[in-house]
Image (cartoon, rainbow, N blue to C red; front, side, top):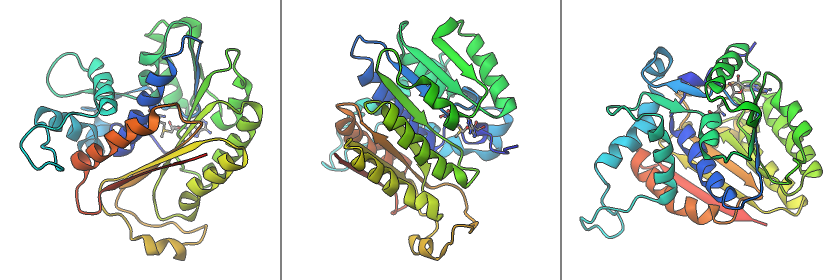
Length: 314
Ligand code: SAM
């Protein structure tokens, strides 16, 4: 069985990029009255303790959400103008931090980090639906128990099943509006190919769905190729796409990439960069990210290589 547990990584820079994008998408998709179905193919445990053993062992939130929260207390000075006027916080960043805050109302340091199921649930309306897949038995049980506390009834379903396989049963959704978040652990190398297969099939079943994929930027051929393959998939299907990346410090040098075969297992000090690829991005997502990403680099960046990219096409 898998050894990946998201509790070690909750609130890290990759979660920040993923969850900020998720919030920005949901804010826009819930502006229309028609019901929305959200499918989270790799849901995790739903809620995480930031003061618990897992989080303390890895300390990853210190390079992510904790840094953003402390930066919020000391507003950054605009790098552009160089003057001392505090920079306005990008609305997408503020929206994300506000959601995190709703899980930490007691004052003091943030202790709870909401995963994608709870972030999504916060933003959905009573007539929307949320389908959560989690295959790991322990995280699946924890997710079940966490969701049960919401007493959300049939609005939220937890499925202890394979999300790659299971997505198709919900496409197309009755309301013909859906957001799919695909956030695998990529613990198995085959996950990269399964993301592509799943999306190709999903686009055939439901071409107008919004499909968002998170992926790690690591020196592994499959990871390097994934955004390019997703771009080809979207372009062939005639669908618009958006691609955002965030790097907080230098990782393994990029030239190493071409030396790595498909079986290579590179040693790495920890994840330093990741990306989000969205097919059929909601209207307004790109300007929202264009405003927020430079602020993430300013607040989370640890060396000169800290950077973001934002591309789109149709
Ligand atoms: N999406 C979550 C969030 O943002 O809070 C984090 C998910 S974590 C990166 C990936 C999760 O996928 C893990 O909890 C893992 O147990 C689960 N998983 C791995 N393979 C799966 C599969 N084939 N189907 C469903 N879940 C799977």
